[in-house]
Length: 285
Image (cartoon, rainbow, N blue to C red; front, side, top):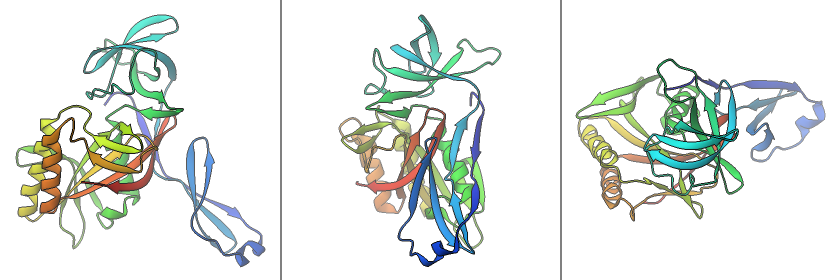
């Protein structure tokens, strides 16, 4: 993975006047600061506890450019400071609804020996918001979320082992916990959203179909198995497979779910420097 990323989770305490303890707090109060949502979790002993959800922050310099054209699956031309330069694109998807001529993009400077490019394309402005296009990030975000306990579906799993091989496939995580079935978890990055509906994939993926069917085999061997789609934007309220583009993947996902593979989807907001874990959204198969 190019570049260095830092994940953090904080808790803050602030003194409160005792009169606040007499008020009934209904639901969860949300505040925003620098693009991060703070959850006000509880009030006790005249203290207000604020929890910051799991996020990844880009270290180093970021800047903006103007997208010109796609070259290959992993490279593109971008105008930076009046010059056209080749950039690394860490996403093999088509991204045609996001990356088009004239789109404003967010770049990350990367200095590494042997690299032919100076910048990674990490985000794009779309519909008044910023969307992450780095397909490496959801995996890292989920890793920290699992360790922080921000994914209740996987509560109790204390051991999080990345990149575990099973059968003919390598899965993103193997989760283990006392008294729990070992769980194979595959994470998928989703960037395609239309009318509030997130869809995967945005390009045919035979590998994706093989992965979910391999999870069915793991179930028969006594594993728990799950697929988690991370939507790299906060404008989706539901997820569904992109059957029009890749019906084979849609069939494979529905077959796996019918056999017991769990399917989840979460949104994630992007601030230009941070990818922040959002809310769980519905899944329609």
